[in-house]
Length: 131
Image (cartoon, rainbow, N blue to C red; front, side, top):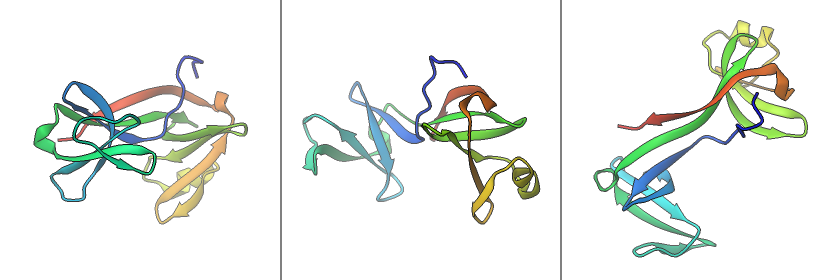
């Protein structure tokens, strides 16, 4: 893994009125909640940050950001990084293959593991457009 790429948690990011802001989907299917660390016009205070609910039509764009890579020749998502290594999730469809690679089942069909950083290859940050 290149030292220039720092793994990031997955999350939504939106472009609204010329600003790029963290976002969350909902509460209704056509709504997006935008977040800011500073007070912005039209945003309301909420426990140390500011938020505003808008419709998807109000946004210039909405994307899902996630850090992905490969472990044991299989695709993975990087969930976190700490002194123990990278916390990754298996993105394949074979529970047997996941378990053979050392992943443990955290929920039905969901597998995760913590591995040394140098064992995860081809790490990159993906921007997936949300229609």
